[in-house]
Image: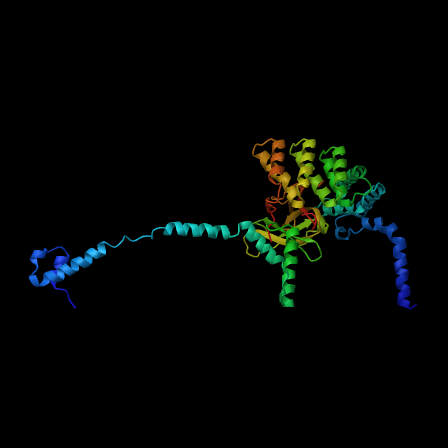
Length: 212
Length: 217
């Protein structure tokens, strides 16, 4: 069904009622009545009193909700309640091993240190020195009777040599030996000491499990 | 009793009876690796030094270790003997300071601290208050470092004890003197530097600086 274009023009305000033919005026009057009815409808929005009822409901809900401490206490109570759990023995063993490993790492120095715990209770220490021109670098210290037999490696050929050595707990003195003859202290050691022979030994401290 | 059991018991008995008596003599030997560097006469004189020191309570292993160090570094002959003689004297003095129960590592640390000028009464007090050998050796090193850095002895002892009280151990304790050194280099007063460092490093929030020169695994 299509609207007469003249009636559409009247609705759009382009024509006056007098401009319409007599045959369309009755229909136009019906449209006017319908539009007036729409205009008289209440404005959209909350029903009277609705805001107050909603706010009251919110207050009641907030009062009924437990506080943070209450929720924490509930959670703890849930954890403390005994309940049957089904864990495969393999998973339990793996979890236990993980906990023990993490604990050992923690007491051996924690993240960010150069130390790691060896199986025999000694502590692994990573020695590193930059010696770009060296053909070989070795490590000697009181832990190996100053025998420069611990060879450092530089696999990526960037001039940074390193070796991982398991040491007993305690204070150790050491030096690097460059190309088999040049004894060089660790420039980044935390401490040095006179070796009694005119050189300085580097000093490091390795803490045992109950000392770090 | 079977033959092998009889022989085992005889060997054990021989070890029990002769072990302690021969222990020091055996500790003095073992220079095989250095046979081509040390003459027989030098080895003999070094053994004489070690035996005299042993009678004063110095573990021969400390002197043997020093001989190995010197010889590995190319120090031989008279120069090596003089260095070992000096070290032996320091260890004898250290034994008097540390008492008869101090182990080799503590003894070496006491000798070094005394050599660096830490007053004997401070050393005695520190060793007495810290019977744990690792704690004691690291603490004595730091005391020596702080003295070298110009921190007064009383203040150094207070700082090291405070650091120990706050749970600093091992490299973390050794790092105190390194950090104080950096602060002094940057212009801080030695005492203020130590106080600031011990204060800064206390508490669980302290994150250990990885030891320079050694990478984290």
